[in-house]
Length: 156
Image (tube, rainbow, N blue to C red; front, side, top):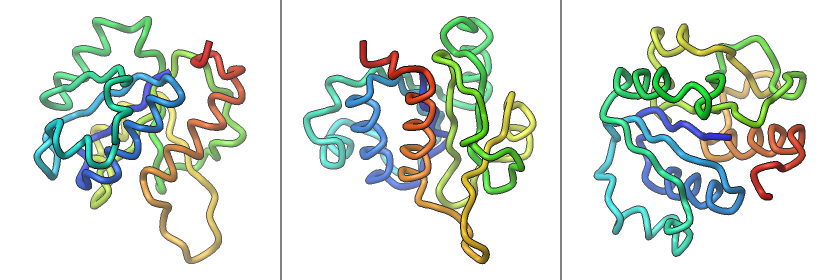
């Protein structure tokens, strides 16, 4: 299973997600550009000493990521976008061990072209009037359900 970060804005969220992925043995794809300088010093501050345990791929652009997905279809699996604009609740979705779960930019989500390229778009139900969860929290909620459904296969 993979977690895909689309042009992240906030280094602390990115570091938190990298740490989560290290703990749950999830691979990570970061699609650039980022809204901050993505370097080891800044990421170590948020991810602490967990970063050495992360399987991390950096993609220079959305187009580069799409090309990588085509060339690595077996490990990239389905692209599942977490979006407040989606209609399908994450908790009713059937996850697979090879799925790639994508979160968008904290400030603006993802462009329409990325939204349309996703195989599935999933939403986390929220109380009326609430816009969204923090991107790191949202990714953790959905990844936990995906791992539960797949028997925590990434931990073996």
